[in-house]
Each structure stands twice: as structure tokens, then as C-alpha cells.
Amino acid sequence: MPDLSNFTRPLGFYIRGFYALQITEPYFILLAVIYVITLLANILIMTIIWFAESLHTPKYLAIFSLAIVDVSYSTALIPKAIHTFLFKSRFVFFDSCLTQMFFVHYFSSMESFALCVLAYDRLIAICFPLRSNSLNSNSKMMLIILGSWTIPFVVVLIMVALIPHLPYCKTTIVNSYFCDHGPVFKIACGDYSPNWFMACFYTVALYFTPFAFISVTYICIVNALLKIASTQGRWKAFQTCSTHLTLVTIFFIPIIVTYLVAWVNVNIDTDTRIINTSLSATIPPLLNPIIYTLKTEEILEQIKKNIKIRKTTAGD
Image (cartoon, rainbow, N blue to C red; front, side):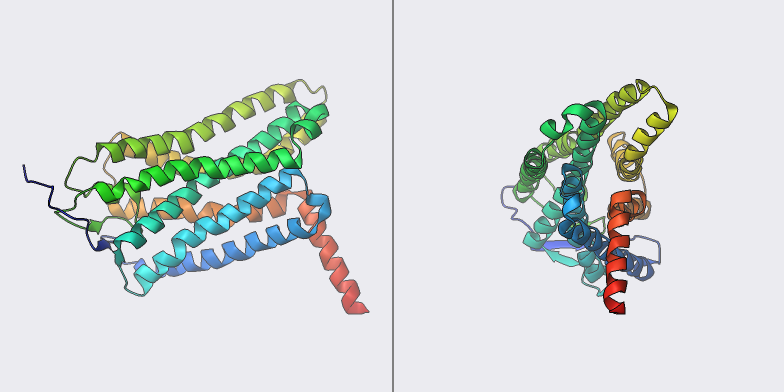
């Protein structure tokens, strides 16, 4: 067994990207378009919530937080990927790699927790309607959001902090489209069992646990809905959850499938994994504001109100 004590950390890593598919440039141009639309859509919904006092409620504080996470997640991932593959700059310095690794995984897990916060809001609104104002005030929601930002920060920080302790003596080619945690630690020469443990803990604590929490909240919500006498009343109450359920499905199913496949050691070729992980990372931040805008009456009313004011002003 080689002596690894003399190995120092590498200068950086080479991001391989697609292995066989010859669609690199068109694909990342598509991601660039998605990124621009994501920014515009999320900035729109944040602006509407910011300036509409009627939307300064716990629910819309949670939606505002989700929009911030969407913008941050996309910004941590897509611009660097575009620079890497469209401008042929696939070498990433070690510290820059760890920085991107931290922010991509941090904002991804924050997306998971943001959906948890919205599930909590729906749980209080439907299961405890008479006490919702006291149980879920703006100040309490701000504390919950702060907690949802802090927990992933600590976990991801520890996970990424373990990477510099690994020796690299064979290769520094990362089989991904960014400095992904798994592909980076798996090319190390030494024992990476602590990194593997943290990767598993990260997945369970920041994805599977939030998904389980959301599942339990909806069991409680369905139970509460069944107690409503009229079918119309049940359907009206359920409609307030349909938007959130759509977002949960879009975000969690690809991630859970990806991690389950990795855990059972099923080999998936690099190109398929890159397409799956990149789309699951970029599509939810794009669709979240669009779905909330189209399916939330309060936001649509604010948009109509602003358009009416502009027309009136222009007419004067």
C-alpha cells in the first residue's frame, strides 16, 4: 500500500462533463436560457410580494424565501457551468471547487427545507384554522425560515470541510458537470469513509427527512379534509395545497430516485447522470414561481391590479 502521507492537495480539478454525447454547447445554452427565465420569474414574484402589503403573511414569507433559494441555487450552479463548458474552462482551482461545492449543495438542501416550511404553513392553515394566527405569525415564520437556512448550512459546511483532508494521487478528473461532492471524494486515494458517511447523512437529514415530514403533514391534512362535511369544502381546501404538492413532486422525485440508485450501486453512465441531475437542479427553480403565479389567486390579483394601475397612469 502506498504511503499517502506525502501527498498534498491538488492544485485543482478538471471537470469532465459529458463523456460521449456531443451536445455540450447546445445543452448549456439551453441551461443559460432557463437561468435567465428563472431569474426574471423569481424576481417578479419577490417584487409582487415585497410591494403588496396584503401578501405580508406567513405563507408569502415562505414563498418569498423559496424564491430567494431558487435564485441562489440557480446562480451557484448555472453561470459556472456555462463558463466551464461554453468557454472551454474546465479546470477549476481547489478552493474555487470547494466554494462551488458548498453553495450548490447548500442551496439544494435549502430548497428541500423551503418546501418543508410551506408544508408546515398548509398544515397549520388546514388542521388548526381557528388557531392559525397565533400558531403561525409572521415572527414565528421568520424564526422557522431562519432555522431552515441554518441547519443545512452546518451540515454542508462539515461535509465540504472533510474534502481537504483527502489525498489525491491518481486522477483529478471529476465525472460531473460541476464540483459535485460524490465524484470529488470518490477519486481520492485514501480512506474516504468519513466523506461517505457525511454524504449519506446529508442525503438522509436534508432530503429524506424533509420528504418524510411533508408526507406526514399531508396525512394529517387529508385526515382533516375528510372531516369536512361538504365535498365542495373539501375540494376548496385541497386546492390550496395543490400548488405545493406539484412543487414537492417536481423537486423530490428525481432527487430521491438519483440517491436511491447511487446507494444500491447501480451503474449509470456519466452522461445520463449529468442530464438527470442538471435538469432536476434547474427545472424546479424555473417552475416554482411560474406555478405559484398561475395557481395562486392572490398573486394573480396583484398582477392584474398593477396592470390596471399602469393602464390608468398611461391613459392620464
